[in-house]
Length: 115
Length: 113
Image 1: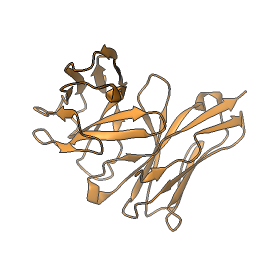
Image 2 (image 1 turned 180 degrees about the vertical axis):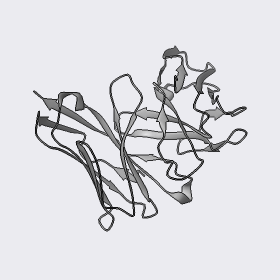
Image 3 (image 1 turned 90 degrees about the vertical axis):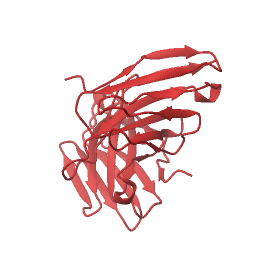
């Protein structure tokens, strides 16, 4: 079982270019999340999806969009990258059925540098 | 405005001694708290959690204490081992927010041999 995979592992991107970060989970979790990690700020939620077909905005959604066409995939798109989007991006998932399922499971991350 | 704060960016501790990591929160609606551990170039991994109906939860060398009146929680690691050297994130969630996580900035723990 792979858990959560993210691609690419790292990327250098010119400002103004479009980029999609991929995230796939094989745990059949209902909820998925995108975070960015920046030094001194911890992890901040960008967008989330409680179930396939629905998405919502997190704390820092500007400049990003997501889609959730199925349970397994949750891509994050930067329509026109800017240097302030240089960060490490983590995808996470959580099973929402039953009780006591509050833990999120994280992927290995994508390191993005916008020049 | 961060609702979860870890005011100590780093902590250095001797192997075998106790590591104490602190976390404060401002949102009184938070009812579930988690600690995550992160190694360089890896994603965060879940370590231990506590519900607001408890004041202590223990799992092996790791114990989390919750003081709701002070809006404060702490993670104790005893004894500390070299493999515990990592960044530790405190996170909080609330039922009325679909249990989305709010994270602190993290504390980097270094365990000295």
